[in-house]
Image (cartoon, rainbow, N blue to C red; front, side, top):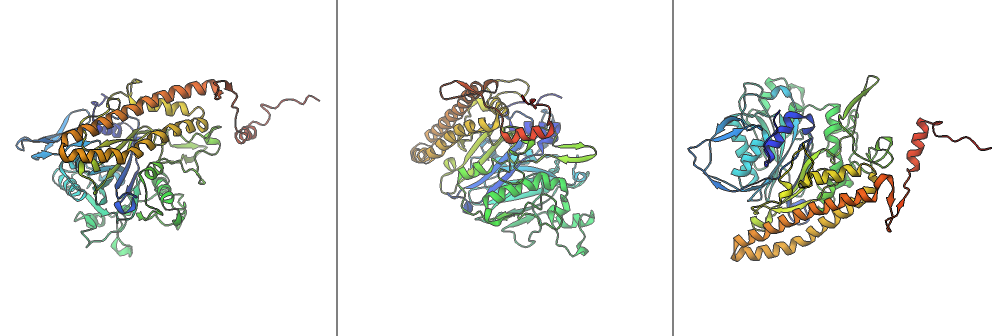
Length: 537
């Protein structure tokens, strides 16, 4: 299989989906302006899978509408064409120049509803909506109109869509081979609340007569009835997620566990029970939206996306499976079988298999060029470092645009971060403290600088918009490269400090680290006589 062309998010995502089921492994947190400390609408995204991402910038452009737009697959082959529009907007990553942001998770759902005759994959729809829409509602209109006219090719998908004032969830699934359009529902997250989803459909019941807060395809319920997915005589209200993505023990463990962990940390007062994702009979699904216990800062959101269920009964840094140094990563496959019994590792928000992640920030109180910020990081969310990319910039830090999965390179930020996170697996409980110290220093500096940087940019924008753009572009590129350089130095430091299992002290002298007593006891339970020394008496 040929490698996809570099330099674009979309072909890379497509390649992952075609190569590995691990790609269906993303998580989104949605924060409305009223739920954030500074009035930002915030989305988060972990794009998980074994692939090397390339950050992309697409400039705004004018087009000849008489020339159709080609829709290509990840290998560059043309699948079909759609109508072009006169003008498309500039896009940085997954945010456009109007502060519109779109991210996703795949829920797959009923696989028989995939339509191989459809033209548009979910990543095509995201790209086109970012280029053609200014608001979340416009994006929903663009995406649903496109699939109605040209057909939907992907399986079940949950989209998170935010502008400066509204945050929406759009869930969509195909009609099956030969069908038309797609079946979908979109709900607005109430202002002051948050929501999340992670590879399992989340929209249940929804109002049929509230277009200000809910939109849906005309046959979303009738198709489910005709297909036997829903029986109106059951007395149960129609639920999109139960009709199109029926719950089972595996998708509860895989998807709902992450939803539970995000919600429990943002709103601990709700004391959400883990029973639902552990498939306890009679347990209730987690609410689609909740009010956080306090308004969330950007730093809070970064922290929420760093999670291995720490402090809970399924804390992945504890137990024999975490090894002597509390390493939370679990190597694939996630499912395994021993003596005929099926098992599954926990699936956390933070995973070594994240290609890239982002936190988008859209703010009505600032002009578009400055209000929209795409905070970007590569590799595992727990060990990444987010840096800002303003939605008006016209250049990117090169280290985030180059590299290949097939060859290590110090020029690639993705490889630099993978070097650090993989080294950390050797002595995780020690090294993670060193990593988080640098992470906290850099991210903390960016957040502290943000008001001053934006004040300067606002003043420049009043008299010289081009200079304001250049100022922000230079700031973002410089600090993106600074992050890469600091992480390379961090990797070299870790390898030196913890070489051969020793731990160098403040004077650079190697000291024995040994093993935690709790782990030694686990070893001795399994092999009680292997390491016993005979009594000298």
